[in-house]
Image 1 (cartoon, protein in one colour):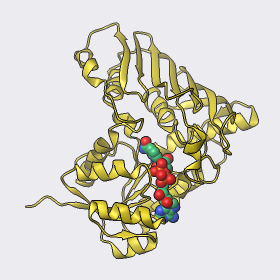
Image 2 (image 1 turned 135 degrees about the vertical axis):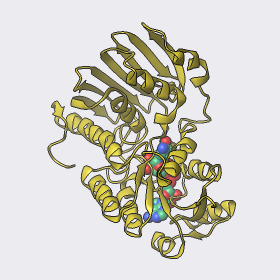
Image 3 (image 1 turned 45 degrees about the vertical axis):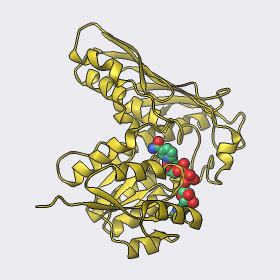
Image 4 (image 1 turned 30 degrees about the vertical axis):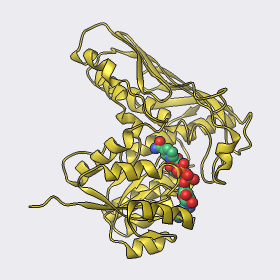
Length: 347
Ligand SMILES: NC(=O)c1ccc[n+]([C@@H]2O[C@H](COP(=O)([O-])OP(=O)(O)OC[C@H]3O[C@@H](n4cnc5c(N)ncnc54)[C@H](O)[C@@H]3O)[C@@H](O)[C@H]2O)c1
């Protein structure tokens, strides 16, 4: 019996689309079947490069192309509408992060996928970085003991030209700022590793970029397990990306995963030995950019889930958790108050 191949259509042929195209092309069992972008040249270029039909209308692509999965790689504020249409057409949805920029629209997307009986995958490829996987295993094996402090630091550089590349960047309606877009993987990682957050105090600012949302900010988290967390995020680092790191300090372990995008084990120390300690050198990677190599691994999981062989790495409900945390950070920064989670109102 031949193994079934899943056909994938992608909407939004911008910067991140290439990571998807390459990941799909590298995987036996998946094939790109159509692409769409409202900018004709982008749709045509991608279609010609990958040898698939291209569309400038998403509705037309859904109607005309035969596919099992739709990848949503459009501006963040459009993810729910595009994902819901795909679900209603009976397609599984692979949604770029963040899955939405409001909780109500994130919930509508989850509901639409549930109603249609299709899978919703939210791309959180940094969870798959080898160094982060090692940390996760160390936590699962109890090697840290009680975790006291957790830190995520994102000191990156995004010049004004980056924001000027597309009108949606840095807007409240379609994007959000440093926490919602660039640092959202780090917000996701800290809660995925340490656990649910009980409350948040935060401050944000737009100090140097002409955008609506924040270019920098800091947040203090109180985790339900008693740990304290600190997030420090800026897109103003001179002159280039300096650090994208996670540090955990526990009773019997201290670990820092750094590099520019949580790609290097910078400190690894535990009270007791584990065979994983031998893997730390090979867990450090040198990705070409801060997006990393994770999309390929992400799609391997998508394929395994659709074949009934695995549970999703990040489904819609898991993707919603970091969104709620980011919205809590925004709420605290806006009001000057400590914000408890879960949020009372669906922003
Ligand atoms: N996982 C990651 O590490 C990662 C990295 C970068 C971006 N992203 C996410 O991917 C999404 C896209 O980011 P990007 O940097 O590629 O942006 P981009 O602006 O380069 O690409 C978005 C594309 O969507 C197209 N588009 C807009 N509206 C459309 C519509 N209605 N129908 C069809 N196409 C439409 C635009 O023309 C553009 O080509 C964002 O949500 C972003 O947060 C994720």
